[in-house]
Image 1 (cartoon, rainbow, N blue to C red):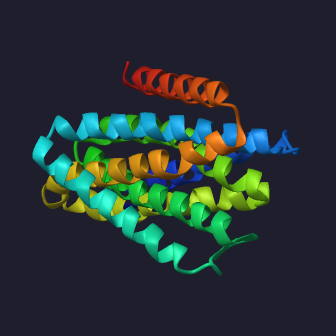
Image 2 (cartoon, one colour):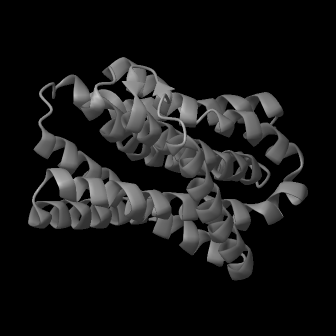
Image 3 (spheres, rainbow, N blue to C red):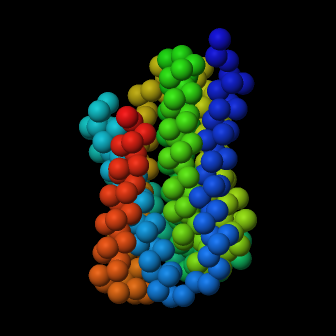
Length: 245
């Protein structure tokens, strides 16, 4: 019999998996401006693919609610960025100013995205242990490249690897927090999933096109940026497709 504690611990595993995305940076220490640009391009591809998947999954339930979520996500992130730019003294760990602003945005976006994943875990356990475990494993594996996307923004700008991993895990904490109430009140939470998926997708897409790609083009050659974005986007979509097989 599935109970709230079981759901919580499974959801906690998905949150912890996000921190694994910082592991590659234990082996790469020297960060040139070109590497910073390509890091932004790689993160943009990963986030773009994740956004398309969220929209696709949400449309299967309700296209209008997904559209509402996308618009809300765009508005929320645009407003948040405007507020952050009005504060040049922004700080995130060891980051300051513009670097801190980008760090705060990526962590905020991934945290918002984790809200929908937490609800998805809880709702899936409402369909039984087997379905819940399958969805938990899929989300945990999916969270690793999301942690990588966060680390790609933070580490090249000077944030320690351990702290990037900690921020990655922090961004996924809504998963264990919301999985339990979603499990207990499946029928109440399920209608909000399409809106939440659209919200996270809209926020990610705004970040990709307004922040990641323009900054990548400032620090790396155009062809290299285009190639990196394309390959990472295709690889992430293929990876997500494999999870559904």
